Amino acid sequence: MSTGVIIALIVIVAAVLIVAAVLTLRRGPRHGGSLKRRFGPEYDRAVARHDGDTKAAERELAELVERHGNLRTRTLEPAERERFEARWTAAQERFVDSPREAVAEADRILADLAGARGYPDGGRYDEQVSALSVHHAHHVDGYRRVHHASRADANGSTEQLREAMVGARALFEDLVRRDHGGHRTGADDGGRAVGGARQPWALNRRQAKES
Image (cartoon, rainbow, N blue to C red):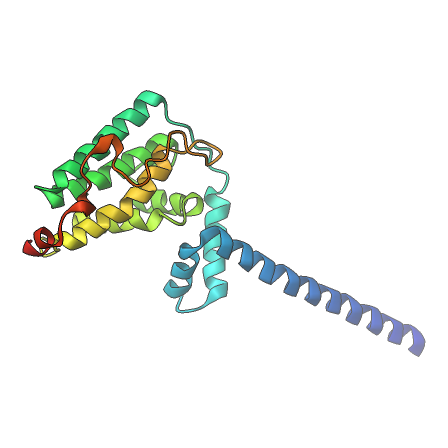
């Protein structure tokens, strides 16, 4: 093989490697940026869980998208929606006198509601939260908080329970009042309790501190 041919082969191989490297660099940031936009606070949570290793966090999130991204949810029937809204209203009203029991009920409601929408069954909490994180990334942490609060020891304050309940409400609204396309299926209540019930976050600070 002549020297000219060898040089030509070296140039071709080098060019291929350079093109591959450029494509990899372009694809990497775009993928990461897409995941960050999709997951929002869940992206930051994953990065923190991996001690700042963004590549490890993005691998984890990409796996979640692969596993749950094509999940087909179902729209609630009007009667189902009314039942869940009534349960949530009752839980909010119960908070005033029995905050811990109300938070436990909110946890059960979210598990049942997510299952009714087509997410993994509430008996598989970790898998259910993983699926919800793909489709409701901005609100799923409220479910985690109310779930953990419902299982915490009795030393938790009323204020902590109230904050958990508040955080859970956003996911409840997303699940109960949105259709397949992500549009609200009912009028926006402007943050008021469904059915006009007194909301737990309306408790005055004195009552919270007394617990």
